[in-house]
Image (spheres, one colour):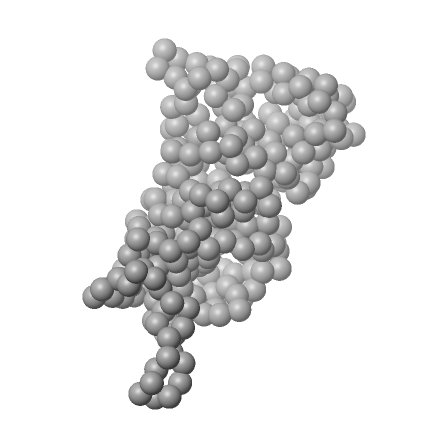
Length: 298
């Protein structure tokens, strides 16, 4: 699978629809993560202060929730974490320079009630927590990480007792938008350039496989699926949607050949028009997602 180049502007064209599953995921995270709101929010949150009584340097943010957002993209949903845990120190991790640049500019800095939001580069194939976390969350990212379930042991080990690991991933690799994309890429015209660049059908595991993996790691796990029926607007909206996500590897592979890229998009567009016909009120795109919330006991 080709590592795609991401386009934040294209991704954010359907930001409202894309954010809804993350909000639904957060709603199922139990209120076990502490959030200590200070009596008075200072004008500036110092990095460290001097504890003269004890004669040592104290960290005024040490008892604040620590949260990691794995695959934060442009940060537009990472900010929802600050709404739920307003004093938390939240770090969004991503491996896309384009997405991180957008997140830095639009969202990084102190949050209104005394927390902090920052962003950093990380490759989730190798990322290991360097400090304890109260919450590690991931939104529509792990499907891009081969072997991601093998990373769960290290991530859950970094959770404090009662901490939570939560994620959602698209669970629709068999849907027409993906199946048609793979069939076209494997056809005689495109297979030499595209046959091996797209996500494979095993990029997401079954709900039972995730439940078993998380339970064996000592977590109480809640795993479920939801199918959203997105009503999309505009011309060829399903193509417009997938150009921001699943089609990125193909667009990256054809980036040096605009004529070929446009030809592929035209063929794929025509297939999508038949699979997702428009209606007077818009184009309906069913989209199934898989969710997991795992609480570390202790």
